[in-house]
Length: 413
Image (cartoon, rainbow, N blue to C red):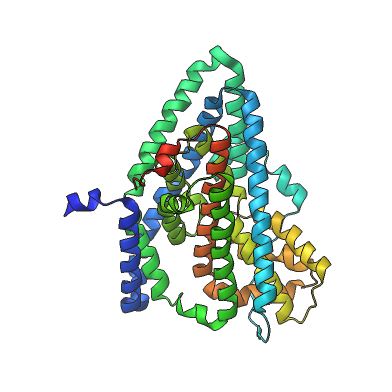
């Protein structure tokens, strides 16, 4: 039995345990929360890996480029792709919301929830530069870690022969962290089982039916974005089979669905990028950590839809100017979204403010959405991770850091 278990590819084991978790959650009900500790163990293991994995592999990836000019080219292409796909996500979300009218006739009641303070754009940009890199590592501040890692990697690369010993150390460290990641991912099926069973047992799925139009808009927007935008990138821009891309990405998608965190999914995202999609280490270790922090296409779809939902619920008329303002503010909000469960729900104040929704009304919207946000957040995270892999595939091919034979072969996990 153990031999059969380990010979089964990881994504199949995760899918099987996910289905089993749904069944157990439905039968066991709230009692399924008693195994929540198993899900917590999985989350803690994977979070344990994230910071050292990002730091070591990103530095190693920058060094591996060898040419400083390549770093500039890769960075420009990566940011351009991430911003472009986010723009498409916003358009899809706003279009579906305008078509389906999810907020029409909705009574938000008097439920409220405290909202956290929102940072200004200027302070958000300044926080990217760490005053103490060691503290940033200890506190898990991903943008600050990425910024310092890029500078450190570039510094080692520019140093040349004298920096070779440090370059070798980071290269070895990258290999070690990837091995640890593969070991941690063996726990994934059991963690997914516990997380899904607990969510279903506490009524997460049934709660979706109370706001079906909004759910349909969000689910439809997420699916359309993945198929139209990322499918088109594969088929028409990269001339690669879109089906093979989605097949290769499914392991990361399943983990993303269960954890609701792009950051927590990052180790397996890097793994499937290299093993299934043929993305070489220099791109996988630089583009994907950045994407897990700033590329939030699922958030863009969701926040755009919720903004229109709120306007319709409160009777606020939206013209072309208002839709443009929603699109612009959603872009900034999605880039600044923390890669943790339901983070986007608490960043809506910025978007809702531009269409005249006050703080009290925003609290009503958040309070209304919060009870059933987790299942929708799970789907949003799938979109985010799919976007990360799509952009990484494109950048890898353009930068000649791509193994097409691996991409076209059957996925290994």
